[in-house]
Length: 203
Image (cartoon, rainbow, N blue to C red; front, side, top):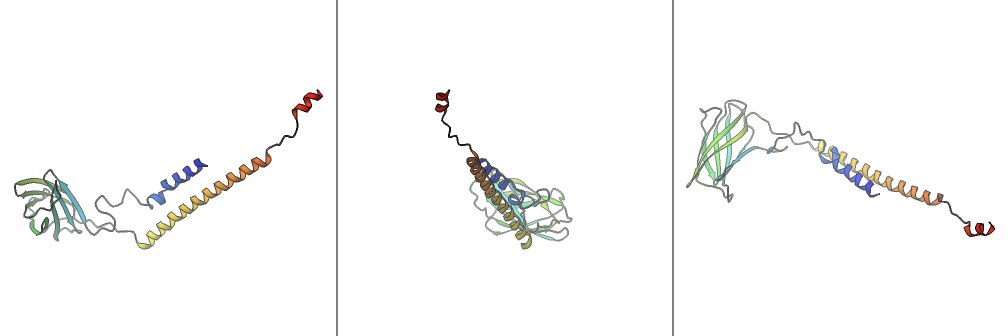
């Protein structure tokens, strides 16, 4: 009985419909951009700084506004008043204006000429600290992953419950069959009423 319970629990936990809801890992959203997200993000860090770049979908040839978050690597405290110089390795002629909006939050303005993947080389000077970081994977022209619609989510949830109910039913059926077999064995067991001592005396 214990083995049957373990087997059913194993099937429940490893069932594709229950564990992953039918998602496709091959074409799913990449790390850092979950389905239903409103922006993309890339990050870089060093022994001095931690940088996070957020941006909404960008189009080549259109004005680009990005938000750069700068903090101290050791304390995670936002760094204000830093001097930031951004260049694009893929096109050295591109110019970027960096303006501090709030402590540790900087607006980056410029324009990417084409729909492709770019990167930023960020030269950061803050007080007596300075460093050079590379922000890779700025995907111009890419659309955000679309979250599953309500009917799709409901269908996935219904499918998961069907699997759970089927496993519970199989478990209950297994208990019933086991109890029935045990009862039959007890009923069919022979009962001996003979006395071996009587036969020995007659002999």
